[in-house]
Length: 69
Image (cartoon, rainbow, N blue to C red; front, side, top):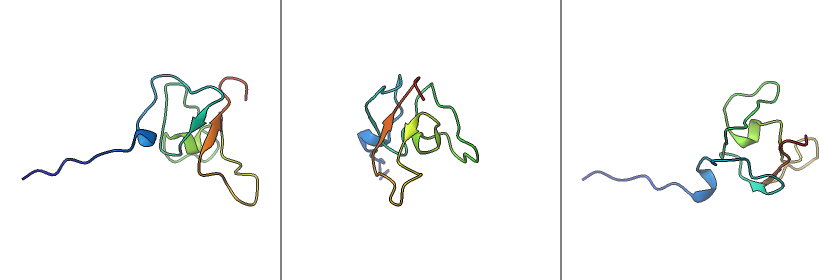
């Protein structure tokens, strides 16, 4: 019997950027633009996503600032 892998909605790719909305680390969209040192094409590594990486504790859910940032 084959086991089907279920993916969370928050991990699925976006068709368009979720401008000024929430983004989860594993999501991605067609506007993905990597930060310096990016390893994967996911929101966590995108220049438009703000996960407060410059703060003491990063956010679990980021905000997409496409195309403003």
